Length: 416
Image (tube, rainbow, N blue to C red; front, side, top):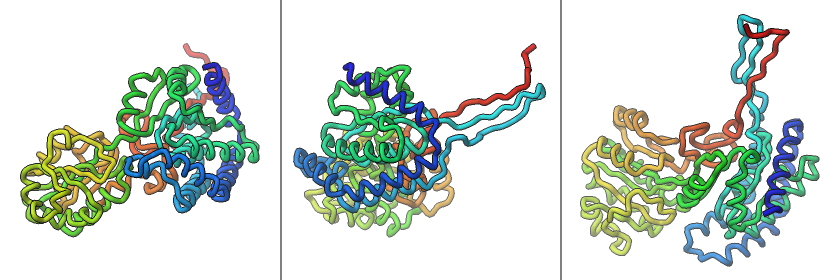
């Protein structure tokens, strides 16, 4: 316990030191970090293999945990992108002079100490580190035990890079994988400024229920795509295939296909590509009848109530049939986690109604929900996808890791 408290105290001190460091120095450190992880790829992959050996390949977390040379190179490129982005620190959001002569400026500043609690996602260790450093924040990382060896290898590289770049080594601290570290982090009132959980709904619910520190909820995605009666069938098939199968273990992957009953005759064409990826479909009665004899029997099941409103994180998908867009909107409102939702349609009125009425962080028309990602949005890496409405919503990158303060300059003014 004392060791954990000491680590948090060191993070607080590091956050104060970061505020004094020029952003050019931070940018250079991030370029060094990108180079270092590429150079250390064999060491990282060996640690990752040790973690993977403890997990079954059919576990939905396996793909999230898995690193490869290509994935390491991609992460390094995202770090370089973050380094090249302008720092939000010091940006003047608002400025004015009052009639009494006081000069007011509303200026972006770091949040301070950011705690990240995440599961088997070693890329988060690097993404978070890059974003927090570039936005002037210290980070306390609490990864899951499934990725402990990988995270420790990455943490060592980050620490070595910080020292080499003359940045405070405690700016990024990896906490022990033990559950006790989570409990201490959640109770660090006055030291940790915000907690951001990344992972399953169970993890996010646990953090929200037990934290005494402010929380920004991210990650859990119960994602729908509605195929309107006006949809182009070929376009729908391509979008559904990509949204469901690109990476099933991520939060922007499709979970429920909502189909207008007028498109049931084309449902087999819309879903045919999914069979090659062995996607198991849980279809309501109308969709089941439309797919019977057209979709592999061993992959087609009748839907039960529990197949709706679930984040599968697997090669599984439900299908709901609706009579009109109103029913589609009601279904989404009932089951959405407010992450990403999409419509496929050629009717412009239906598109605009969907975009206006669906309450989610990212709402798409005729595009795959797989694009809900900070890098895809041109933000560099992301710290997570916020599904709430306070402070930040959607992909969180550099601006979302800042707050602001008012700077007031006077010349002897007193208030009457």
